[in-house]
Image: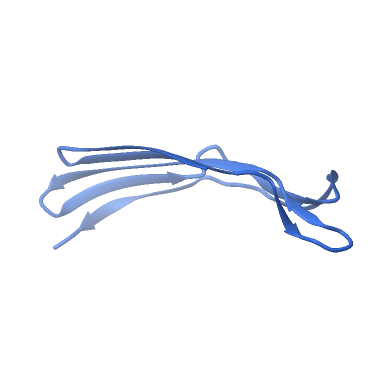
Length: 95
């Protein structure tokens, strides 16, 4: 499931998104593997301050959501991946 709020007016663009996936079967057999439900927030904003020049900022996984998987039951963890927020900023020129 995804939910997005977007704003675009007078050279200003802003976006806030939430992405979620329920738990799912990742592999089957003697020891079936599952991935736990996972959700994260992403955000970005930009401003065109001169024709063709845009400054922007972006953040991915703002809440540091972790991912993990298990086998048979949730106490049998098979992997755990820490989630780290990632940020970027810059200036773009288009012609």
